[in-house]
Length: 144
Image 1: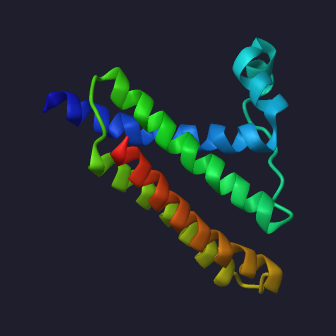
Image 2: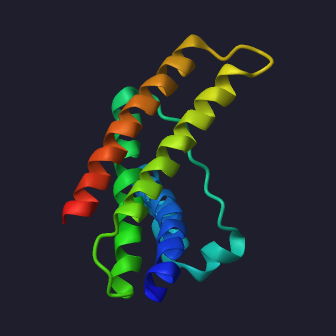
């Protein structure tokens, strides 16, 4: 029980970093390699510019990479603590990923100046696809 109390929150935090590294691996593999391998990369700063997605396919690829990175990092932490699939961790990670997408959609919708229609449409699609991908990844996480 104590292992679960320690590993659960660590798995959720690792999922946040795994999601960021998953997207970074798709968007900028060279930037990720520089960040992880080069000591000079850390001295320059760990911030890397990530441009917005230009198409629905690119955005969907980023969503899939984010989900697999998040659930993969959570799985590694649980494996390090010799725990199997924990459904509460899967549910937490899926909710965090979906909540993040909904937050940005609400932010764009409530700005003092109106965002372009295509941007709002892309974010609506992102919320739907993100929720589906996160649910499927959570089910894979639990059943494997």
